Image (cartoon, rainbow over the protein chains, first blue to last red):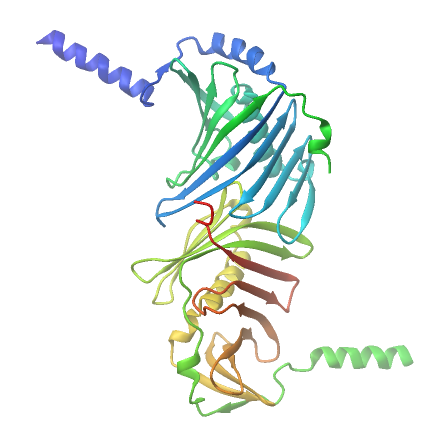
Length: 209
Length: 207
């Protein structure tokens, strides 16, 4: 009987530790971090289609938007939303351009700390450097095909937007697969990448404005 | 001297009441029938210009089963900026707001703008006013008139507005064939530089 109880306790502990079905915790996170940082740095650029699903739980409303995403080491991201609305966002170093239906706006992240942090998240998600960020504590899980990075903001500025950020990374090329932004009230945004092309030598012009 | 006179005239013109000659009238017969409809659930792209700053995002107007309204403003990438709740009894609740917007004047301004846009003040008994050839119907609250313009044929309404005793402060212009789901909404402030442009979109267009 004692063996049965102990077995249940062990299974229970493993379940609590993981909390992501199908994933198990990476035991030596420091070792993983070192190896992953080197491996992720080999992803020089990415072009992919994205599907972004935002769920507002209390309102029982969901909106799915689609578009194309480009990333280039070390600090360039572009997202073109094409449906159901048109919107363009380009982050190029400290500068940012957003173009909505009404206006094109250029901003400097240096003049806006919050913008700088939010920009940094998108770039860090793409290049896998979130594990190095001082803005988050982290846990790492894995299965045969993916790593799962669970990031919890430590700064109040980011906590007001996100309770956790979950980045699923493909083991085959260390590129991001799904980015999940969870808010404290239960709302969430899930960005899934598909038709991904890695290291195709994207020209800088893609990110110029 | 000429400059002084010109300045004085400009000053006096600036002080001139927008509502000069406004008189109270018996309730316009069609006012209750044509008063602004309460909005139905819809998604809008939002473009906000405040004192030279531009902000864009998505605004969802949600009519809840308990007859309350929730207005949630997010940026295009999904981060929520605010979530406001308007109860049928007129009470208002900030469900969530980011620190950068969590300032009483900001929230009060947005509350009044969206209340007017939703047509909520016109659930109360209405009064009427006349100003030159224009007719207004609405309510008075906290020293402000909250009204809609009654079109001359008395079959529809024009802009929804808020004014103090002397100045027009805000106007809401609704465009589109369906009154409960306008295609576009323009909120203009007259006492400081702020406009909110909302354009309805079909969130399920590509599904």
